[in-house]
Every structure is written in structure tokens, then in C-alpha cells.
Length: 193
Image (tube, rainbow, N blue to C red; front, side, top):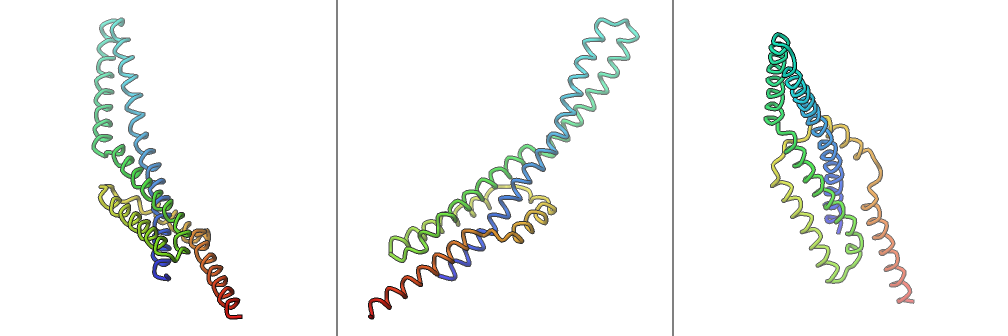
């Protein structure tokens, strides 16, 4: 039983760290995505307004405005090309999917204490099914192609979670196992008397 608890503890810590890191990575890429996307929208809006203004202007101002518009369009196209090349939207979505999968792992781990205490054949079968489900989710995560999250996010959020003493699920399992052992020893002692 100790081996299963060790595996669950490792999976829980790994899932908590990766869930937080991938959520923060979504925020990180979303921020960078907006940094490139919004200037593009603003430049295109200014360019459109400038072109409309040049229609009703005299010839000299119209030429100047068309040159300014051409420069702005070129800058907008360059920024848009950089935005497309970096692929922040796709990267953001991949990390969002990975974060959801780690959330599913955490949800499954929260259901495990009941089945660890159930020493019947049925309890063992369900426990194995949950463990297999968690392992399958971990395999699905490995199939998603995503860039590694930035190291500073792992350092920041990983160390916070490891330093945090709130591994409640594992603590609940250990307390429940201890209570279960005490009850068994008390009932066996009562049976002998």
C-alpha cells in the first residue's frame, strides 16, 4: 500500500505544479499575444483613417498621407508576420489543454482516498481503474505538442507548491489509513476478549 501512496503523492505534486505552471503559461503567452496583436489593430485603424482623410485633401497632403499610410501598413504587416510566426495563440491553447488535463488528474486523485481504504476486490478494481485513468491522462499530455513553459514560471510556482503544506489529499489518506488500522486492531482485540 505504501508504494501506491508514494506514486499518488508524486502524481499529486507533479499535477499541482504543472497545473499552476501551465495556467500561468497561458497567461504569459496571452499577454505576449496581446502585445503584438493590439498595436497591429491600432496601426490598421490609423492607416484606414489616414487613407480616408487623404481622399478629401489637396494633392500635396494626399501624397504625404499616402506615404505615411504605406509606412504604417508595412509596419502593421511586419508586426502581424511576427505575430503569426511566433504562434502565441496556438501555444496558449496547447498550454490551456495541458492545464485542463492536469486538473483532471487532480480531480481523480481527490476521489482516491475512498478506494484506498476499501480492501475488498471491488475497491482494488476501482483503485486500479483510477490509477490507469490517471496514467492515461499523463500519456495524453505527452502527446500534445507544446513548448516548455518558461523556466521562471517553474521556479516560481513549483517552489511555492512544494513549500506549501497543503497536500490535503495525501494527508487525508494517511489519517484515514491510521484510523482504519486502529479500528481493525480494536475490533480484533474486542473479538479476542
